Length: 135
Image (cartoon, rainbow, N blue to C red; front, side, top):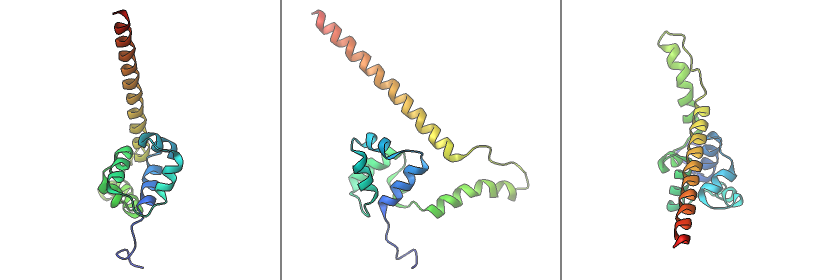
């Protein structure tokens, strides 16, 4: 079967991108405000509504196009070029970090920032409630 005739199973692409990002179904579910079972069902869907796909893309930190055009082969080729380019240019430098680890690290930092912002908002609300209580 040629690649031109294969159907694009969007749920599998979402699942693979989620895995590459080091994200569990529960984390994606929390980002989307749905249950883990709903994420599982979503990842089994061949087609997804445009609006829902936008929300999933945002939660995964990628574009909608990135999900729609995701290819395992392209991803492998992309990451293998890091090593290939260093050999082709005659220097012996190698990538000293795993790009996927950097993606996971960026996601964790984003999560920590979100928690700090949420805590600051909670403190503001408590302060305003305290002020209103005095009147």
